[in-house]
Image (cartoon, rainbow, N blue to C red; front, side, top):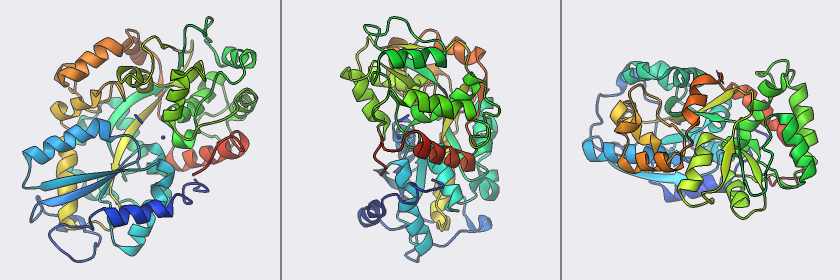
Length: 409
């Protein structure tokens, strides 16, 4: 699960958008006409000819859904002839997609994103209201597990949940250095004070674990309103400023956090189930790295969404709807177990581990934590901030906490 008002999102790399436009095929369905918004009633059951889908991934989602997409192409060559993938950071998303939507010339057909990119695109009115316009074509959404259904509600009809996990916030640490593992935020602050620059996390706008840590603190600290970062997070903002005295830099991506743990730069970081399992499964961190939960905390859940830029052709919209319906079947969705990247990963009832590829089953058996499932069942779960509110939280963190200690893109 790989990293506003778009003070920083709108300022995303316009250059990247130009590169994607140059490197990706234009919106090539069965027509050479410029892309226009396809009315719901005009989208056929199948495209008139197989289409190429150009997918932009800003969430590391390809690890989870890439095999599902490949299987769909193999099973349905009459719908999709080929797929291309591009990768970008979530803060670059608006700068990439908005010029395409404004010009009605899409080179990106489908975006796989987390809450951050979903939020920014809703704010800038970039996404097709896919559930409102085509919900009857996505009947498998009725089979979401309950927390995934709640994540779906956050999308306001503009995205379709493909994968889900309870996320965190958890702690990951080097047991050779951290002998007294903090069980509360207050104990974590004391540890950081005693070990300056040995604890850290990434900028929340670029990082799932950073974002989850940010949104989990109001619950643990007893803030007035965990859903309101502007007026309800007085304790959280004060805590993060105090903690920041002992953090010298905030990376602009979770990958650097993993590197800092692997090379010993840091000894403890906030994490999620997936960011704990997957780097160890891939050999990016030592197997000896340990994890722990806070004594009293609330899971802040997370999901990946499929969103479609406005201006999509009828044939491509047809292919996308078929693809998403296929992804939301238990046998296919079980591929989301991957090697623990978004543990558990599936969003659909019946997508159990025994249906996952054997390699996934082995990775979870070897690198999973035997206490995860019980904690997932027992601890309360809360959905993350709404899209507009999340954008505000990111901006407040950038100005009040991270200013001067991270490099904005």
